[in-house]
Image (cartoon, rainbow, N blue to C red; front, side, top):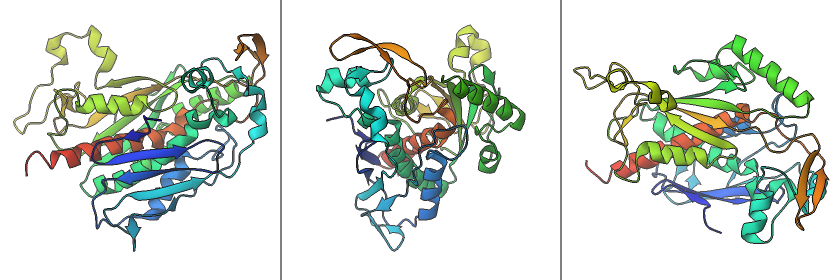
Length: 355
């Protein structure tokens, strides 16, 4: 099955299903002799894992990563980094009712149509559990980028109609201090109330995540098809439940005149405004990269829904299992990880262009 690998120089290939023995991956292209902090990698996984608060799914997984290769005495060797994350808390019986049924707006139907055979337990390969592998690769990429003074600030800026209107850089402790991972504690409380009320109804709600990256040097990105923002968009849209991506002024630019949207230069090459979101002509310009990612409501509801089975018969589908009422709090480290993978990949690509 194709489509399981990401990147050109810094690459990640993932494997495994939600209710299989383990998920895992192979990371290649990591520069050798780099000192890794393995505890920080596990910390990133802890930010994504289920069961961490009362507003997320209560599936209990330690998400403990086990490295199999590519690291010796705490340093990268330059060879592929293989790893697994064992699955520990599957309730496969919760999914027996989906063996021959399709959840509306889920991947059940499309996987069956494409492959003719699917693992219905927890969604199998289509489960967001696969994203834990991305967090491992992203955590490694972030450590390398941090050594280059490239930093990330990723947080929830919207849940349903509750929005935090800001695109500033916030420190990790400001984000992690709040349950929904919105830096503003008051708005975070409103978001939390909405998520809890939605879950009580057996329903789900969407949201958005803002990512701001500082310290990215000018010159990253490739013409014509490998534009930096195009690869960031692809990375974000590969995440489960993502429905939209906008960079800089995004869709707001539709109503602006060019005279107000253009970013005037300062004498040092920086710009007075940043409507471009740090990327012009598909190449980074040295300003902070800023983008938003929109997530739809989770397709699996704790409500009965009308659907069909694999024979085309109309059925009443029962809501069962353990699922998030809103994915964005747990998706923050996933967005950040995918962004880090893209930036590191382009940084390494740039090394082949000029010294």
